[in-house]
Structure formats: C-alpha cells, structure tokens
Image (cartoon, rainbow, N blue to C red; front, side, top):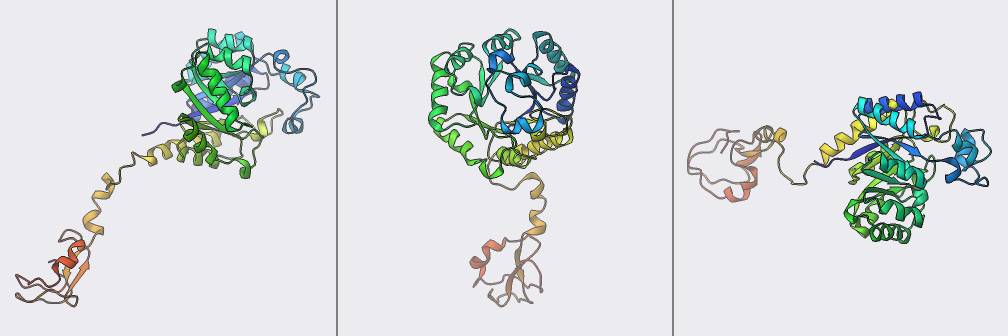
Length: 331
C-alpha cells in the first residue's frame, strides 16, 4: 500500500499566540495528520518595507505592508522548542518552513530531517545553496514555476549537496484560495515524468476534494492549510480547513491509499465468496435425455456458478449428453 503523508499546514494561523499554536498541534494530531507545519522567519529578513500585501492578505488583515504583518507572526527559538515538545506529547511530527538563513540554521540545530522549501524560494539561488549544504530530505514547492525554473532549483540543490533521491516536488497553485480551474493537477504528473522524482501536492483550494484527487493520482505528500476557525483575523485563515475538515481529509487519504492497492487484477478476498453465487454455469433449459446433443435450444447459462463455467458454452454445443438432465439442472 502506498503511504501518502498528510502535512497539516498551521503556517502562521497561530496569529503569534503560542497557545493557539499548541491547540493547532492537538487538532492536527487528533485529525490523523502525519506532520504539523509552521513557518520560521524574521520579518526584517523576509520582507522589505516596500513589500506590499498580496490581495488575499489585504482582505483578511488591517496591516499596511508585509513587514508589519510578519512581525506579529514570528516564532523565536523558545517557541520552536515548546512546539516541538507539544508535538512529541501529541505524537505528531513537527515541521517548519524556514524563510531566511538564520531560521534555516535554527531548524538544522533542532535536528529536523525534512526541510520544506516554499514556492517563494524556488528561484532564490543563495538560499537554495544554503539548504543544499545541509544534505537533508527536501520538499520543494513549485508554485508559480515553469519546468525550467523547477529544473534550475533541482540542479542547484544537487550540485551543492542534496541527493537527488531526497527531493520530492510539490505541485502548487500559489493563490489563496486557488481557483479550481487553475489547479492543473495533471502538472503534478508532468513533474513526475520530467524529473523522475516523487511528487506531491500543496493544496490552496477550498475544501478537500482536490487533495483527494491528487492522492488518487499518486501524490506521496498532501499539504493543506488548516485553522481553528476560518473567521479568525489573519492572512491565511479563509483559505484553510477547520479541524473537522482536516480529519475528513486524513480519513479520505487513508481510504484512497487502501483503495489504490497493488495494481494486480484478480478476485479480491471478499469477492471470492461471491464467485459461486454470482457467476453462471451451464444448465439444461429443458429436460434432456441421455444420448441427445446439446444445442442452443436445450443448453443455457444460469446461476449458481459452481458447475461448468458459462465460458465453456461453445465447447459443449454439439456434444452428447451422457445422462438424463431435468430442466434447470447443472450440466
């Protein structure tokens, strides 16, 4: 059975409140997610004073620019340590995306084995080199990118210390929420074919159905934003799942993994008991005397299937009956 990892993206939906962050961890664990992921940054290293809010951000918050918004959402080292402990208590793995060199070093110091590179850093040459030298497993998000840009990022990572086999590409549409018509989910398969790497999907659409479709297409990772309440003030709440929706996603992904199976076409364990009941056998359509020949007039197919298989019908036409048969008797 394929295992699809579900990453519950808490992101900055903690609103700078550590208690909310811990509640998000508990809800992600309760829902059955494999990882809960935050974002690690220092505002002044991530955005300049001139960086304006994205249109989706300006609808949900009252800040004038990215810098003032981000300052309220920073997590320091102490907060990281507390969140990691909370994850351990809740039996869920901690993950975070670093957006600057200082926080990249922090995550390495905290011994994270899996590093997420956001779509915003796909073309960030110096940052890619810094990540690569750590020689970690990488989730590389590809929002806003074309194949050439993805190839650039992979090339930089591999030339600077990352093992190619440790890279998983995440297809993504970098809008919040992402319009379904612009998801282009088949591009995930294009990435898989073009680069011969594992692929997953970072989902920004409303609901869970597109994520489930990605799992059915073979995504090994599903990443989805979630919140305690979509009505909370903050940049990402509106495009996030609430806890009950996150649980439905996790349950759905598990069912899809089971349903995909191993690809071998044969009767399943539960089907086998139905073979004799549902299949058909050769039967006498009317009384047949010993010495008569089987014909279309006296030979037919009916349930149950525990006699001579109906697939032998043509072989028996014209053969002589070796005994008497009553109507509906199995041959």
